[in-house]
Structure formats: C-alpha cells, structure tokens
Length: 411
Image (cartoon, rainbow, N blue to C red; front, top):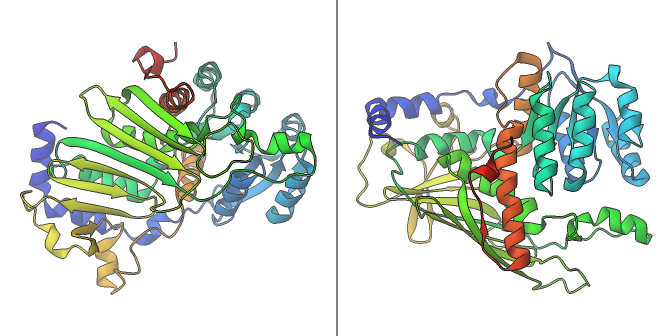
C-alpha cells in the first residue's frame, strides 16, 4: 500500500468505518426474483449438497437439474432438490440445455477440466469449485476455454465474495495494519475423508481425495482456498514452498497424509506458515495476517483485529465491539455494525448469517443476471491453483518447489 493510499484512508477516518458499518444487513441476501435464473448442479456429493442448500435460500433461483454418475448420490440429490430432474452424465444433462442457464461444478478436482470445457462449449455459465484442477495443464485448459467464451466463468474461491473478508481486507489495506510481518493459516478438522462404499469400484470413485494420483491432498484441496485469501488481501503470490506430511491418526492403508505443514516464502521475504490436519479439530480453519500496527484474524464468518499498543488511534475504536482472547483483546470486524448497534443487536450481528458458499454463488448469479464483474475469474483461480499444486508437490516430495511468475500465467 502506498503512502498516498494510507493518507487517503486516514483522511476518511471514522467516516469510512461508518460507511462500511451502515450497510443494512439485508444487503447480504440475494434475490433474483426478477431474473428467474435456472441452475443445474453437477456433482451431488458433499459440496454439491452444500451448493444446493445455499441456492435454495435465494428467491428467484430454480435448481432444474442434478447430475452425478453415482446412482445413489444422484437419487439423494434429486430428493433434496424437489421437482428436479436427475441426469447420470454431463452429456445427458447438456442435451436438455435449453432448460437451464448456468451450472455449478462440484465434481472431484481431477474431473473439472472435462466438465467445464463441455459446459462452456455448450454456452452455459460456469461456477467451478476450487482448486481448478489437479494438473497445471488441465487448469490452463479451463482458462483458455473461458477466455474465448461469451459466458461467465467464476472459480469458487470464497474469500473474494465473503463480506467479512471484504471488510477485513479494507482494514488490511489501510494504516490499521500497515506493513505485513508474517501470515499463519490452518485447517483443522477431525474426520477421515474416507467414504464407505459397498464395492471396490465405487469405493475408489468416492474416495478420490485419498488417491495421490488424482488428489492434491490437504495442501492443495484445502490450502488453495487459504493461499488465495492471502493473495486477495496482499496481491502477492509465493515464490517457493516447502512442505512435509505424515499419517498421524488414520492408519487405514491410505497413502495420502492426514497431517501436513507448509512454509511459503514471498518475494519480500514474508513467510506464511500453514498446517492442516484430519487428526485434530482445535482452532478450526482461519488465517491471521500479522502487521506492524495490528494483526487480523479471519475465520469465514468472523473476523477480529488485534491492535499493537503503539499503533496510532484512528477514532472509531471507541465504538467498536471487543472480545477477549487470552491476554489479547480483539476488535470484532462486523458487517453492518452501526445499524445493528442502533437496533440493540450488536452481539447478535457478530458473524455472517450464511456460510461463504452462499455469497460466492450469489456473486456468480449477479454476474449472470446483471452483468456484474466476476469476483474470481478463471485466471485468478488458476494462480491460486498453481500455488496449491506446488504445495501438494512439496508435501509429496519433501523438496522445495519454486513458483515463478511464468508459472502463474497462461499463454
């Protein structure tokens, strides 16, 4: 951030804070009643079900098709969607192309390229889950297909649509945080990633995340999203990454590590430490950016700022809600804070009413119906996918992996 940018923010002072806080809470509710947008979901697994649930919250959105090659998941998805057709293949779905406008791709990462290319070629707007692909060439192919198309292509890197991340980013890009010192991110969940199945073929298909031939593991499948959060805040991508992985809990014959740690180095020598595990849930998932004036911690629906004792006061802090974290006091960054305070509902308003997926899908459909800017293009999704692929390679090999500027561009 330049000195001019900092002076502009300081000149606005409390006025900017009020402008952010005065946004009414219903600005985060998407309504497409006037557009009547029709959507098909490809992939009826866990993420596909999540997408379905969030779309069902939006007025004017009709889920008109569910597609999955697995009969049991397809049947379950159709039941959840209600009055929705089921399709056993993408080709079958696209033959009914006149019945829908957009698709949400929630299939395994290694299948994204084939599905996305087919949907783009059929003239459908595409929301594709991240990471874009498990191979560089497949991710690049999706970018090229998107470049030449007259449809919207958005990658599901959720931080870029999340109102809490957007608010926290405005503080990061001000003198409130100032110069970046380091970054820490984690994703902790006690689960196995293994899906029970009745036969070997189905077990292999459903447990693709545990297959090192097609999965990017924890560092890629989860880390890509959190590495992108840093890129969203800073505009920077790492120049190298080291990693290590091991099995700490799930000794069930898997080759994929259930616990990983990565060390990402950026051009200015700032380091991001990242770890993810399926063996312990403490702390959940979050990122913390440490600056010389403050640290900002973001955890999907919540965010806090921890000011340094010697950081200058900007005026608005006296009105801020605070939470105690051990020996530190965090200023909660609340979307709609002033409006909620007027209504005596400040504590109720801490956090977002919906998960990050809701806002990403809402932004995607705004681009489809209102020609709004795409919040995360295929090009942007590609860059963070490259970082995720590099991190997965570092964990797998135990070697340092370089990330050059050329690697982050698609020719």
